[in-house]
Each structure stands twice: as C-alpha cells, then as structure tokens.
Length: 211
Length: 211
Image (cartoon, chains in turn blue, yellow):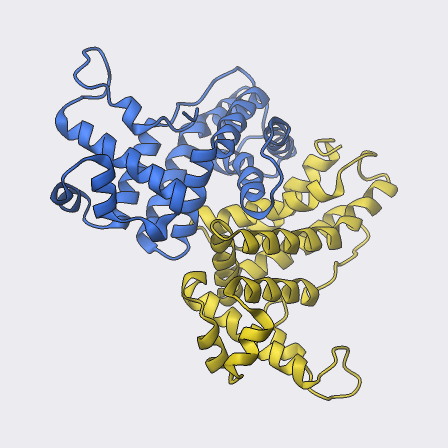
C-alpha cells in the first residue's frame, strides 16, 4: 500500500464502528470496483479498461457498474476523487525544508511503488487524449497541492520565506522533478531524488523565485 | 514551426546545393513520412497511428514504409531520433541564468506550440505502455540534456556554481516544471513559467543542491 494514496478497498472498514468511513453495501461496492479499476489501469492502461470486465473482476453486477459510473472516464474520475480523499494529510515538522522533504518523500514513494507508479502513468497518459480524465486529473493535483500549501504559508509567517511567495508554485516545484524523472527517464526514483526535489524547491523559494 | 524541433520536411532541402542535409530521394521520403507521422501523432495519438495510413498521407509506397520502419514503434523511434538531430543547439549568453533562460524558453515554446505540445504528449503517453517508445524517448532527452549540459559546466568554471555540480540534473530541473505543468494542469505555458523554471534551477544550483 502506498503511503500517499491508501487503497480504497482497505479503507472501507465494513460496519466496524469507530471508523471514519461509513461501511454500508454501497461503500463496499464502490471500494471493490475502484480497487479493481486501479489494478486494471496499473496492469493494462486506460485503453484496455472495460466496465464489464471491472464488474466481473470486482464480483459486482454489471448493471450496477454501468448505472453508477456510466463510462470508463466516469469510473476513472471517481477513482481520482477517491485517491484525493484517501491521500494522507500534510506533515508539519516546524521547518520549511522538513515539510517539503516529507512532501517529496510521499510523492516519491508513491511514484516508486510499482502499482501506484503504473496507475499514475496510466492516468496521465489517458489525460493526454481524454478531456474528462484530464479534468479529473487536474482536480486531483489541485486538491493535493492545496493540502500541502499551508506548509509554505507557515514558512512565510515564520519569516523563512519572502512575503508574497506563491505556496502552490512551491509545492508543485517539489513534485515536478519526480514526475519528470518518472515519465522521461528510466532513472530510479530513489530517496536522494526526493531529497533533492525538496531542497531545490526550498532553495528557489528562499531566493524569492516564487514571490 | 517550433523553435526547438524543426520540422523534418522543411529541413529536407531537395537537391539544393549549399544546404547541410543531403537531399536525395531517400531523405525526401524519410522527411515526408516523419512529418506525416508527427502530424498524425499530434492529431490522434499513438494508439491510432497506422503505417499504411502514414504511407497514404505521405504519398509514399506502403511497402517502402513497412520495409524501412517495420512497426509503429520503429517509426516513432526514428521520429524521435530526427527530432533530436534537428533540435536547436544550445545558446551561450555568458551567464548561467542567461543560458538557462534560453533553454527554458526553447522548451516552453516547444511545449506551448499546439502541434509540438500534442506530439510530445502523445509520445510521453505511448512511452508509458510501449517499451521501445520509452527507450527512444529517454534517448531523446539524454541527447537534449547533454546538448545543454556544457552551459552548467562553463558556469562551474566561471565560479558561478559550486564545483561538482551535476550539469545534467540542473538542465533537467529547468525542464521538469514545464513538463509537469503540461501534463498535470491546464495552466498556460506562458513566458513567466519559463523564466521561473530557469530562475529556480539557477537558484537551487547556486545553493549547492546539485553538487
């Protein structure tokens, strides 16, 4: 299980009281279908994703899947919504570099995870040709960037960064080299790459590049 | 025509003396086929690229295309080789920031160009599922990064950057935020984004992040 994106199926805790997520049949069906869709995307990509196949593999009625998600793009949109909802909240370490390192390590370990890395590649590829998937993907990143942006805002308040620093640009700057490495090279997404991404974003932010 | 990647067809100067590229029939056929393949990729993506269709649109015999390129992945590999060969050489402005700004503007304007942006998206998407295309794409970036790396080496020699700075990492750091923006958002690839990418890479390099 990736640290950034919990698996939907594991988060559906059935009727267990005290858990955050309600565990009715509808939630269980959604979790099973999204888990299966994620597996299928990671294994075979968007082009081979098929609602009837997902229903069969998830052991859910085909009509339920078609009624609830309608299309492959609709299913991927819901998967991305769930991934954003299930993603871990930000870490606060008390320093900009500490927070950006935590963010970088979360992104890095997610992309380095075989299933999650393949899943992100598949969705990014699909977004290049499918407008609805592109919209869902952009929304996913907006949510994740907004979750981490307060780390930068706090650093400005602490006087670590120039006033007027754009928090969103700093958080995006942490992710960018990791996604670039994933998509344009076969270099490993090792911990050094994550640390460097955080340090580069912090150095550029301190130099006032994002202000 | 994009500033980073010249169009193959325009570079094939027929038998015109004084041009760099030899202009025999073989070169003209290659130029026409690669131009057509690039157009088709930009318009419809890798999944719908078809050798027979490219041959018809390029007005070249189908058997010639199959004999010379064999497969769609083979054709895309040759297109990427040609794009790397035709790409503009680095600019030397005398300062690290000037050189990185020139590099960023070249990448930015290429990705912002409708045809070239769509072409890069299509090839990056294809590389997520096709191993041969991934290899060709990685090679393309290795060549382009190596072309610009001496800007960083010269900055080290001039004392602008710490000794031991990894020139490849600095050049990749310029491109990363531009590709990230292209693939994960609908934000425009404007000149400000290019300038910021260059300034961030320069600031991080000066802070010793890549040493």
